[in-house]
Amino acid sequence: MAELEARLDHFLAAPADAGTVELVARRPAIDQREILAEGELTAEVGLVGDTWVDRGSRRTPDGSPHPDTQLTVMSARVVSYLAGDPERRALAGDQLYLDLDLTEQNLPAGTRLALGTAVIEVTEKAHTACKKFANRFGLDALRFVNAPQRRGLRLRGLNAKVVTPGVVRPGDTVTKVC
Image 1 (cartoon, one colour):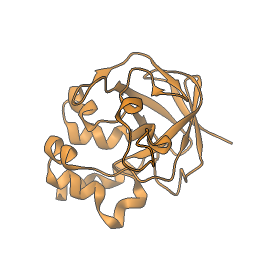
Image 2 (cartoon, helix red, strand yellow; image 1 turned 90 degrees about the horizontal axis):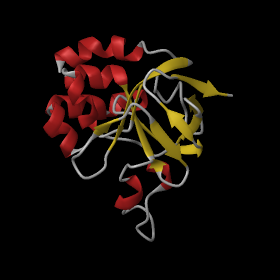
Image 3 (cartoon, helix red, strand yellow; image 1 turned 120 degrees about the horizontal axis):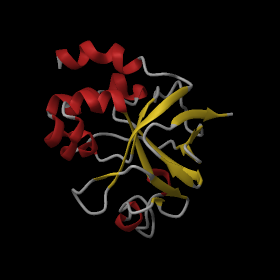
């Protein structure tokens, strides 16, 4: 935990207005990850080939996928540290890994981000770590990113939805849309 606390300033030093897409990953099946050179985002399915559209949600009346959890976005700085090996980053289970300040203060719900040719919108639904996250990165990692005093920092990431379809690639710039 002390090592994570010591890295907090580095995690929070990500660019506020213009960052970079570091990784695009889809989940074609439970516990599977595919690292993509290019991902297609649509309003209907989120990241094409990802299982979000098939999994449904307990939080919708009819069990359909929750529109506010279409995409999950995580800080590239946080996941790089937790994963150690770059090949392990996608184990976090998110689709987009950005070098951008993801804090609630910088990106309140409703903020739109342009990345590649797509635009996504930050949703209000909190994104928290679960047992799988702890199994992959350790209990201290889970406690660190879920700590109540750090929730607004969104160290685990955020939820978003696609508002303008398009293509996103690692290396693309990500900017706030006014």
